[in-house]
Length: 116
Image 1 (cartoon, rainbow, N blue to C red):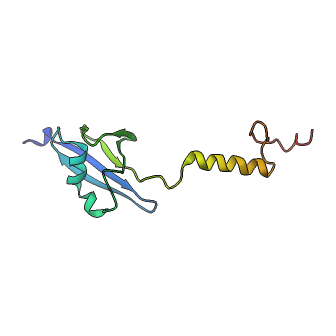
Image 2 (cartoon, helix red, strand yellow; image 1 turned 90 degrees about the horizontal axis):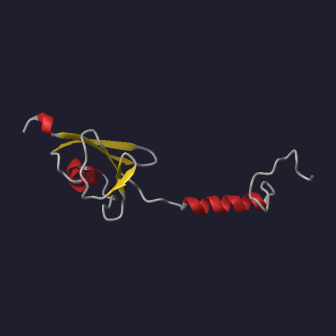
Image 3 (cartoon, rainbow, N blue to C red; image 1 turned 180 degrees about the vertical axis):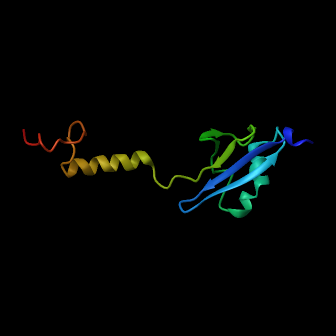
C-alpha cells in the first residue's frame, strides 16, 4: 500500500506534569479505539481505561468506533478531580460571606460605592 493512502494521526494524553504524543500511521477506516491500542499509549499508561476515559478529536468528543482523517489528533481525557460548577458555587458563597460580593445579585461590590 502506498504512503498516500495511509493516515498520519497523533494520540495524546496529558498529565499535570507532562504531555505525551504518540504518532501512528494507520489505514483510512481504522477506528479511534484501534488507533489508541496500536499507538502503545495503553502500555505506557495502564491507568487509562477506555471504558471510562472519554476521548476526542481536536477537543470534540467522539465514540471509540469513530474514524479519523489524516492529521487528526486523538485526545484521551482524564476524569475531572472536582466539579467546576461546585467550585464556582463555593467561591460565590465565600465571596458573599466575606462581603466581597453583593448578597442579592452575587456581583462584585465596588469598594468606592460600598456603604452608599
